[in-house]
Amino acid sequence: MTKKERYEAFVKYFSESYPQPETELQYSNPFELLVAVVLSAQCTDARINKVTPALFRDFPTPEYMASSHFDELFPYIRSVSYPNNKTKHLLALSKKLVEEFNSEIPTTIKELTSLQGVGRKTANVIVSVLYNQPAMAVDTHVFRVSKRLGLVTQTAKTPLEVERQLVKHIPEEYISRAHHWLILHGRYVCLARKPQCEKCEIIHFCKYFEKNKL
DNA sequence: AACTCGGGGCA
DNA sequence: TGCCCAGAGTT
Image (cartoon, chains in turn blue, yellow, red):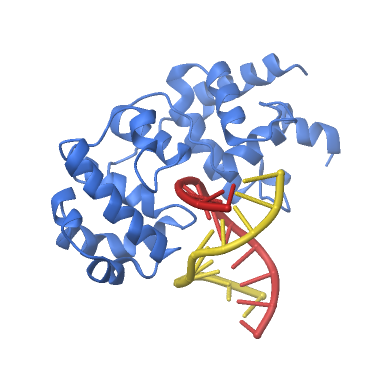
């Protein structure tokens, strides 16, 4: 099976079997989304959702956050991963938003990644959710599942390589759905150490399944 | 390319 | 108590 055929089967799967997820935007403004996504690095959504209500209540805008101090902000996010780093990032990030971006959230990957705590993956999530751009945010799930399926070359070493191959071959209108699906599939089915192939709906075009004949 | 930053969940 | 999870920044 060629890579081209895998992509055709992949897109066919989305068009027939995977509806557009109802992604209710759970944040009332772009700043909240940015902060939540920065906090999400190496951390589950459930843990983020525990801290965001109080955080956004007391630091609703870049100005409020930029004018606070480490000891004020830290307690709000002490239960997320890497709270020291993220507190520093959020303080520097909010200051930069106020001073260089007129307290608005930038629209380009280049500008977003210039913000502290925002890497390539986070920036892609932002432009995808906030600006409806067909961006593919490559986390460990997307990275692993894409390679297993055979949607990207087995020699791909960096998330950026995987991202470029995926966006090159998946039609724009399916990028968002594909991203959503790859993450859930990686989390619940295509597990890192023990793939649950018996639960998988798309073994008919999976390179990993084909090779290992599970 | 390898290392560091740290919590929570769960066996 | 110890293993597992999961990106950005720095060297």
